[in-house]
Length: 573
Image (cartoon, rainbow, N blue to C red; front, side, top):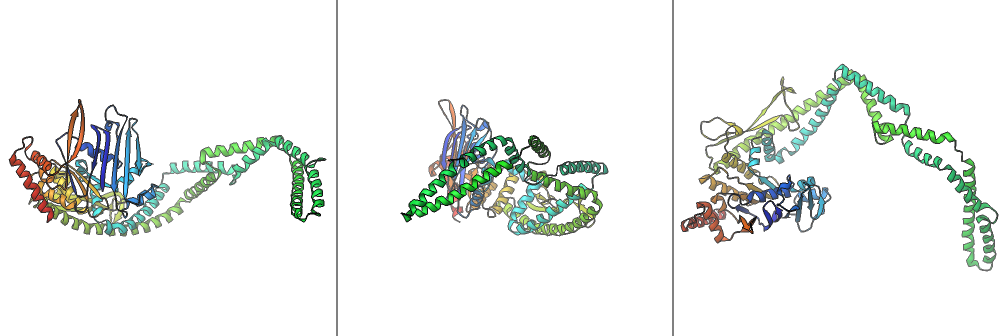
């Protein structure tokens, strides 16, 4: 869970540090106080998109830090390990992000520099954010399919793997088949290109490792004179009269004589004798090497021409000789397929037919499983909506297939298929008795969407490992008994999760386990946002303000106390 948040020089926040606890954390304050700014900061610390506009005026950068306390069994630690990020034994995880005036970000996880993509990969395991914008996602059919699959994650896991494996095989074969069914002009052009490229590469007769050998040989030829002069000088120093070999021979004679008087010197004599014969052999090798050195003037030109040819091919076909040879093999294979495309097409179509039949079987298994889950989810959401004062609402997760001209054929009809399957999922709603079920985007109001999203999140809260959920004004467009029902539902979700809620409703605020007030302060003509933890008395004052506006009376205070007491009784139950 999120245990501490620090924000510096961010929008109108100069510096803010706040500690949080498990349970239902409520954030309230007047409109414009800066509640949304805090959510923006949290979104950035888990990898959201940044902007220089977030940096406080006249400042070089904005800083956000978030400290999390995560169980050691949580999947985020595996993610950290896979990214090469240091983990901790106490379960504490520190994220830090600096926004710079250049528009770039500096991100750190446990003090280690990471990319923004890595920060996002870690952050997605820590916080789930739900805002009015994300409620709109609920209207998108692709999101509705994702929510259904999330509900049946464990049931569908292996079924989806089986389907996606077949789909990858099907998609690959289909692409191969399409490439063979190109028009004759395209095929002729491709044949010409492949023939030219194969001819150009084969003429050079490349050999693996050839370039490295040529570079070594070029270096040897370029410095042939220096090599000859150096070896001749070394040979003369070793072999000339009174040279190294003669001197060593004399030393051996001396050691041989004295070792007859002192046997301890015998070992030295033997070592020198070995060295002498080795040096004598080396001297002979040097002489032979010099005698065999033959460099013709045109030899260097031939090497340079060969290296130029190789470099020319590298610019066109690959970064090394080996890569060029691999490319040549691949285009020879393609050329063979095109030249024998009728034969290949027959084999390919036969294999594609077999894989398509297997894919249809897996797609139907996946679809049938989703149908069962859709019925269960529909009933469960309807029950949750009843709890949220939408008693007469009917809800249905509808699954259909979408017909397509170039789709996959099932029972003499063609249907659109993707890596997600055949299913087109649509959430349907009938808010009043007698009304037909209609798509959410055709009928649902903002308040209804908020409650539907809360119902779904109540159901899915136990399905994932994300420890913290944030609801940003999920109660928009809701009042009265529905507001109380939302408060009670949030209290239930917060039993197993750390929940943050930004709200304007006193019913929701009174249900808080921990209540924070966000205020805008002006000091020395400078505006800044502050956040403060409210004790019981201050909670009563804030809920009174929410009930009556600026005019707080003893009556509204009594009402606020009563709401808090009733909330405590509900949570105790």
